[in-house]
Length: 218
Ligand SMILES: *Cc1c(COP(=O)(O)O)cnc(C)c1O
Image (tube, rainbow, N blue to C red):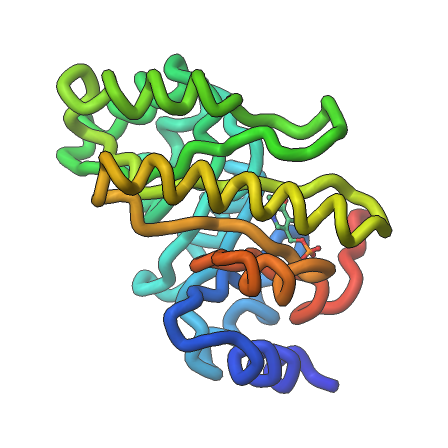
């Protein structure tokens, strides 16, 4: 199947209210343009340099999402255009995003990345850190808006494990939402597990290889 057929098939299989982020990391500009021509507007990248290059080369109404781990010193390169940052994992990083957003006269929407996996290698805050940041950020950092949570499940064949992690993130999201109604986005689910993530309440899925095929990192 072509990447456009893959895109259509996924769009047909997910509910209308779930946003599909096409994860285009490592993919050539032409492949992104092809999906753009087929109607896709939301793309996700995990490296700042690649994100900037693609922003410059491709149509300006693409909504670019930063989904990967973000170093503070690189925020400035994308602050003028990034649509949503999924990977806020510290107050320091949020502070820097606020500073760069202010320089660009913008308010940048962010998700707090929550550590839900068993692997220690995955980034993210725990529930307590996230709660404290949510309670305290808005006066200190007026140029950022936290609009939801993101999480990555453990890389495992064990579906029960993955489901439990999604359920945990959803319960945290519901709990925070009681107090902070501006939290609208729950970003969870990738190629291998997005259907399950949607069953467990995801509102935004980040899908790469199921659209583009396996990535070639050469
Ligand atoms: C690469 C990546 C994805 C997409 O992964 P696929 O398995 O190719 O769908 C989703 N989220 C993040 C944070 C990623 O880095």
